[in-house]
Image (cartoon, rainbow, N blue to C red; front, top):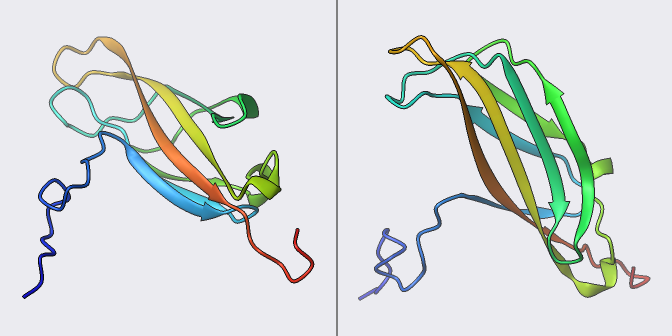
Length: 131
């Protein structure tokens, strides 16, 4: 009989309040974003800002980048050239993708700003030469 249950909390693993990605260093990341207001109604942002930081080594990887999405959902592609490990010999590094967006609320018609984070764990790729 297997003790594996679909609920992470019952398996002894914490339920994370943020998205968590595991990627090989140098590979493209595709982040699916859905912009919603306080009633979870999809809204199209008037502005969207994101940045990527290496938390393991306290280094900025991608400076704050601003764009204007054209719909309530967007797939953001971060090129592999921006997902390079600071020190590849350490094996992995924890990165934080943080974002904020401004939109018009569907109920109050007032402008609001929301923010969020996701963690990206970059893993070094072992090569025959070692690095």
